[in-house]
Length: 94
Image (cartoon, rainbow, N blue to C red):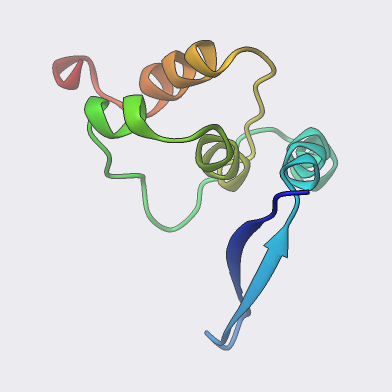
């Protein structure tokens, strides 16, 4: 089975490498409602990607980005990309 190389940073700023199966990423996204019961969770930094960046991102990267903000989306990769673009880009960036 393929795994995804990810890193996890703890509160002290130390990073450790993780190998995660894509199914685990999807399962974690589905559980995000439990982690963020009020919905949207605003991290410290807003994503700084262009429309082209979102169009090139792999599905697991989009899933991780959405999870970071307490969002989840179930659908095709193209619909997930459109959702991320609509969520994170200002109208003048489209």
